[in-house]
Amino acid sequence: MDGMHIQFLGGVDTVTGSQHLLAAGASRVLRDCGMYQGRRDDARQINSQLPFDVAAVNAVILSHAHLDHCGNLPTLVRSGYAGPIHATTATVELAGVMLRDAARIQEQDAAYLNQKTNRRNQPPVTPLYTLADAEQALGLLRGHRYGATVAVAPGLGVLFQDAGHILGAAVNVFELEENGRRARVGFALDLGRKNLPLIRDPEIMTGLDLLVLESTYGDRLHDDATTAADQLAAAITKTLARGGKVIIPSFALERAQELLYHLTCLMAAGRLPALPVYVDSPMAVAVTRIFRQNIAYLDDETQAQFQRLGSILQADWIHFIESVEDSKKVTASRQPCIVIAASGMCEHGRILHHLKHGIANGANTILIVGFMAQHTLGRRLVEGERRVRIFGDWFERRAEVVVLNAFSAHADRNELVDYVRQVGPRRIALVHGETEQRAALAARLQAAQAAPVLQPAQSETLDL
Ligand SMILES: [Zn+2]
Image (cartoon, rainbow, N blue to C red; front, top):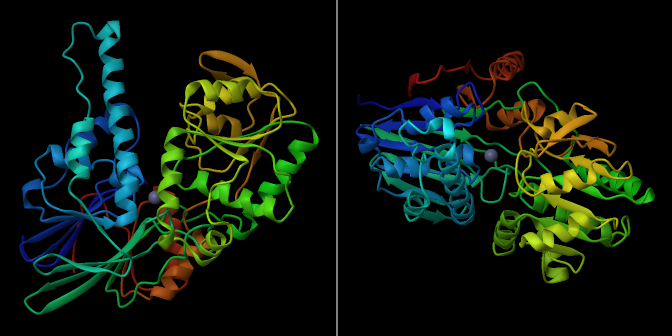
């Protein structure tokens, strides 16, 4: 089918598996190839069967390094794609860490299933993709700076602007052209927020015929991002007064670095004593290194801090832990300290060891600074459960659980409405949100008399 159009292929009325295909004449460009995350069998099927003709794709644009946007690139490559994948230079570096880790998990999952005895007479499970597939995908990445417009296929160019979401994340303007007709399509997913630490505020795209916008928090409000440091200081001060530890489950990418930035500022201002902070996640250590090597991507405040201190996210009270032995020493210690560990939703990883050793101590605090999906240990903690299971054993939760709502890398309802007002597109397509969140945002935008609002269905094609 020729003509200019967009097809909504993934992450439409759900928040994972983002995929969009743009067409101008014979050119086909894919924006993001995200991994769908959900029940194991569904995920397996959705992720292994790409819903488009891979051979027709000329180029891929990658918005950022979160797995729900980049996590299925190795499947694309495994399916025969060998063209370029364009992203910002910071995203290229971060994608290396994220995709290698994802591939290792796919390989481990398959190995685990194959050794289960009830599968003895069934054909072996193969991983969705392997480390070799991930390496091949990483080899196709091409890095660009914010502000760069790249001609990616005949009649298709793309501009990278700052999304204000995580390091290197981009909102993209696609410029399509066919037989002298033109269309400008902007993608604001994922869209960040003003005043996040480390990174700049979201840039405003201009002259859009269509804005494709996320609706993750289409019906929710966060506390203002500027209150995050105060909330953090209050929770830590209270814990120190009773001689406890502060245990923070955290995503390794962005949230861990945000925490270190806030702690640096609080200690420099004398609002917190210089107590030891342990970053117990090899992935967070790798990501923090990438932040330090990409100062040009960071905001003015962070650059000023870098000028003043000669470094960022580095201090004698910050201890980066890579080995399991060092991790064990911290879990066994009763000294007041702050532990930042993955996984962010307390499903696996070293945070489980810290919780196992610290959850029954009423002096300790478990600080929640990220989204907790249903059916995760993190969600059970948020919901105030008094007895929880960790590694198969039951534990009495006596540690205080404190939820800080100022931490979010996604625009909330008011921030989304405000962004639309500033961009002023001719049409809006809402995606990347659960059904109710998306519908609520559509109603808000209509009430605010923004442009016509579409809620495309999965696989729907829209002419431009
Ligand atoms: Zn994201």
